[in-house]
Length: 268
Length: 268
Image 1 (spheres, rainbow over the protein chains, first blue to last red):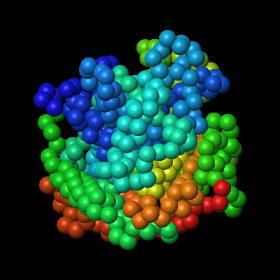
Image 2 (tube, rainbow over the protein chains, first blue to last red):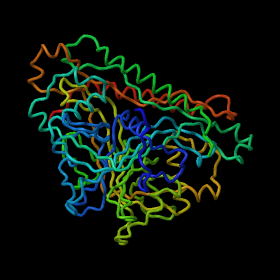
Image 3 (tube, each protein chain N blue to C red):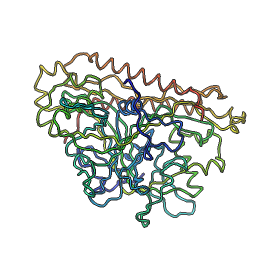
Image 4 (cartoon, rainbow over the protein chains, first blue to last red):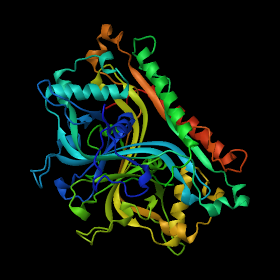
């Protein structure tokens, strides 16, 4: 990217508390979403049966920008989600209350927990985390080429280049029973905490108490274990593209969570 | 528990797809919530400004059942959430559209990803996971004793017995600026996938392809790294209650993700 692109800080996406933790640039928001092993998608199934409760589905997905071959401009980035065609979100009408709306209004959340922050007081306990929230209009992807683009992207976001190492192309039945949703982003933001525990001056002055209470951060990260083949797997060794990805992820995750655990708090 | 308690399978909570993965018993649902390092809470801030989008907040919390000293019966289990008194969910009126409702309608999701399921075809790719969803009425906890109960519970759900190893009791200012929400559970369910990759008979018959495509599960789990003290920490060694918990969690997480990776699929 030659220029740093930023999501506009709307009332919906503006971080209200601890503003120094907020970030709005595309790169940071997209990286948090694309490295999350699962996304949480919230929507209102209300429209079916007057139920007042929103619901949440854990889904697989990632950001992408699909530009049809005949288009003159690049499409704006969107979140692509993957699910069975029979799942609830896939079957939602765009909005029976108001079909002038351009899709189902959804919220997509991606959260990484990078450490438990154990301060001197319970009140100052916290987590190190990277969190992204997107609000947007969910629409089903029906165009064959865009669907193929999204399925490739989502599969490769699990393990890079996995798509091309599987039995492809998908059959017609597989394409029909797989649903893909594009969330056209309306607003987005991210919030990051990445530093050591912070305590109040009064508690820090109490050395007797500080000799009793351990204060610091327990780093946390996701680890990918040794791959376990199926009983019928015929490939003798775990392929290099899997092992290299696994090593890179594990190293990166450990280093990040450990490194931020000792960082000083940013100035307020 | 002498009897196995079960959440009723309501239309809202009934798992629609892959029903063999659904579980409704209290023990399973609560264990998934209580071992999740973060909860995702969805609600509709709509009522403020006509915004059609639900939103999601990542929050810390766990299940609990608070019974006041003078009560004759045990309270039903609820989800307790913790946040700053100034955060958006804490400030929501119960429901300006209909104040006869017994709280803010929310959805709470807890998700663990236990492995990436790499099948022969992209279509059969999946994840091993444990996911719990609760729908309920969120109400602020104002009673001092219940708030203390919930804060102790949530702190100890980060690291067992952490509360008693910190500077307690909280000051009056700390109690005021910490908000606690109780979600009175209306419906709840869990969904679990815990087995190896599954492929279609047609693909399994293609041995030429199977010699090319590695099939199996990459186990995933959260690891707690070596604790990093603050610059001002005065406790020389990391306390035993932290190290023992860390070891137990790390061992358990690794074992579970690895063990389920080789399990056969349950009969449909």
